[in-house]
Length: 435
Image (cartoon, rainbow, N blue to C red; front, side, top):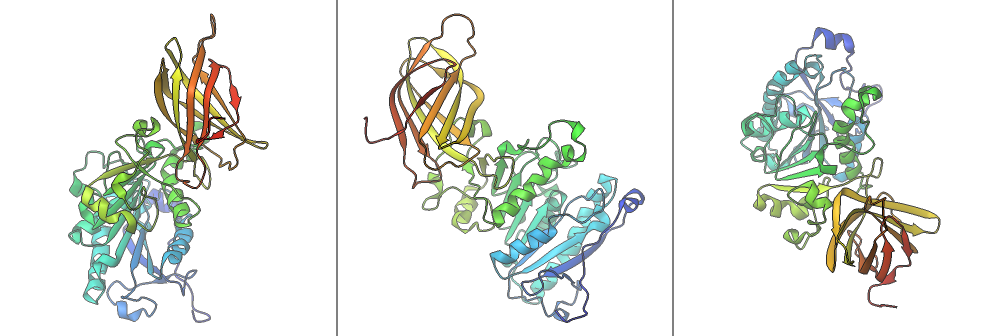
């Protein structure tokens, strides 16, 4: 960048603009590896006049959503830098803040079609000058996800990829596929859901849909209105932060194909045979290992759980138990892993489990911390029985299989007698031996 040249920054509006209402004006801010901190506004019609823009590089468009306060999104700078790390590309921030910044959400919704036409025209200019549509990737947040879908539909689904981060729900819940983001809008559509019961859209809208923690309530987000603004936006914004973390490669968030989150929690979906030779799909930029399979499958839903803060990843074990007890008991299970002074606990309490004579039970145990050398495991089965005698529960075998970490050893223990509601601790053994 020449000394003395000024940068073009994202439009910064304030609340007065939102009260009065803004009329749509779309700016395209270009960032490349050579101008990561200094955006350059592109002319919609003359690409050749911008030397930093290269038609031979792939192009990613970043499209924000509704901006009720008019302030620039706090994550714009992060996403630009992280995308530039993935590969050498043109990164274009689609600034439609004049249009998205309105206290009236319906006005912003009505502008999405117009903004999409504007962006479609620009991409058609790119194509006319020699760019390939298959190298175009639209990343849309909330309302921006539907805007990306409209652009894709205008271009007959020929663009390479659309990533929808928690597509907006309000005004789109009864929309037909033509009126919202859907898999026909691009050659590949991946969607992440984090707030389906409020600002996000329910259902499945891509070739692959990732549902974080079931897609609705995110851990660490406030549960009551007394927390002010974050009560409204925390779950919805989590989609952006999970995606940024995945781009940063600090979060390896693996999605398990499943029909529902409760089936996933019930340990019914812990295999990924469909995706051989690759493993389960991982959230993020590089989808090449799964892309073909997912395009053939049509629509795939995948589920994962996260912790409440960076790096969001949970440590997961499949736990197989064989119980042998005289009386049928129902209960929830608490498992603790101990490594030195560190302890991490998994609570498998989303529903009551059945323990009876000679039954195999498979559980999914998810821990917030990754402890490596496990010296002790403690186990408690809570039945809620507080009156009368405590029943004994005998475990003929319990086996811990680490998921996503094939290099870690399997841990077993045989013949444990425990009482309901009382914690029992044991040293895990390698599964080959019974000593």
